[in-house]
Image 1 (spheres, rainbow, N blue to C red):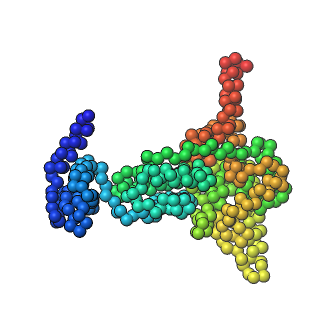
Image 2 (cartoon, rainbow, N blue to C red):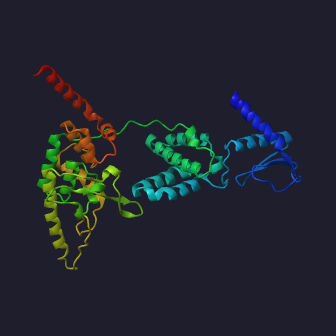
Image 3 (cartoon, rainbow, N blue to C red):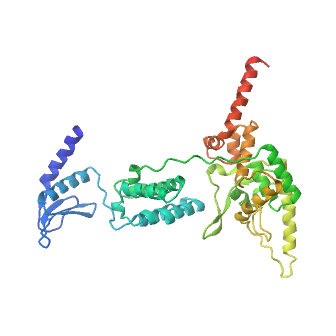
Length: 404
C-alpha cells in the first residue's frame, strides 16, 4: 500500500508540472502537451536522457495520462531510451564484437554460428526497443517444432540472454526480456561410452601391431586423458622425454574460415603438468623416431626439401601442424580393426578417467589430470562410476568395523 501511495504522489507531482505548449524547446525530463494542427491529434512529449518520447491520441486525457505515467517511471529510473532503429541482429553483432577478444576462438565460432543460423533469422528483424518476452518464447517453440534439439534452443537462449544483459548494462534496453521466458529444460546428459581395462589393453596392442601413424596420439589420449586440441597443440619445448612430464599450455583447433588456430586451454585448470605412464612415454619416444624418418624422406624427394619445420610435437608427414579432423577421422577404422566396441575419439579421455576412478584414484587427482575447472564437474561427468566406488567404500568400512 505504501508503494502505491508513493507512486501516486509522484504522479500527482508530475501532473502539476505538465505544460501546455504549442511548440518549443524542452529541457530533459520536462513534459508537454499540444495539439498538432496538421493531424488534429493531441501530442504528449518528453525528453529522457536526450531522447524524445512521444505519444499521440485523439483524446487529450489519454496523452495526459501517458505523460504522467512516463514522468513517474523516468523519476524512478524505469525508462532507458534506446536507439529505436537498432535491431536485435545489430545488437548481436555489436555484442559479439565487444566480447570476442576475451573468448576462445572456438567459443566465438560457436556463438557466431548460433546467431547466424538461428537467432538472426528468427528474431533479428525485431527492433530492440520492441522485443517482447512473447516474441522470444514463440521463437523457442518454433525452433523445437522445426526439429531443433532442446540443447540447441538452450544455446540460443544463453546467447540472447547474455547479449541482452550487455545491452542492459550499456543502457540500450530497460530490461532483459529473456528473464521473462521459459527455455526448454535440459535434455538428459550424454552418457559417456567407455572401454574397460581389457578393451584398453586390446586397443594398445592393436596399435602396436599395425604401427598406426597416430599410435602415440591415441595412446596419450587414453593414458592421460588429453583432449585432441591439447595433444596437437603440444610444442616440442613442452615435452621432456627424460622426465616424462609434458606441460599443457595451449591447444590447436580447426576454426571455420580461419583454418588451424592455436589458442589457450579450455579452462584455467587446463594449464597443467602431467606425468606419462610407461606405455604413453614409450609411444612418444617411438613417435620421435618415426618423425625423424618422415623428415628424412621429405628432404629426399625429387622435388627437393618438402619438410616444413614447425614447433609441434605431432606433425603431418611434411612437418606442418596436424589436421585434427584426420586424427578423429582415422579413429573408427582403428577400433574396427581391433574388434572393439564403437566409441568416439573423445571417449578415450572418458575411458581414462573412468578407469582411474574405478581403480581408487582420488577424484581430486583425476580432476587435475583432466584439467577440469572443479571437482564437481569431474564427478558429474563420471557419475556412472559412483556405484562401484560406493560398493568399494562399503566393503572397506565393513572390514574396518569387523577387523577382517
